[in-house]
Amino acid sequence: NRCSDFPKIFTALAKARAHVEMKRSNQEYRAFDYEFHARCVAYIVAEKYGVDTKDVEIFGIPQKFAELDEKALKAELEKLHNGAKDVSAIMLNYFEKDKEKGGKETRAKKETQREDR
Image (cartoon, rainbow, N blue to C red):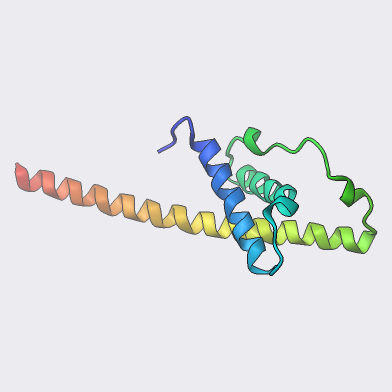
């Protein structure tokens, strides 16, 4: 179901999931330090699925990125790319399972309705 809050919920889940995935590979992870990364990942995933991105729009790039050399910047972009792939796969898996579950529930309802007749 696509309710009016769906884009807000979708992007919030994508951002939260991005934090979870980034924390897995970093023992000293602090969400505040990676908020920009998580917003970027949520934005990329929302764009991929055609979800409104207004809740994760990016209006500027943190100063620390301007100070990175080419190799370090490439590494940061790689993190974003990998994060977006991981979160996208997780979200897709969830939606496919939910779709299958919905299909099974619909079939069960139809069978129950037939039995009631």
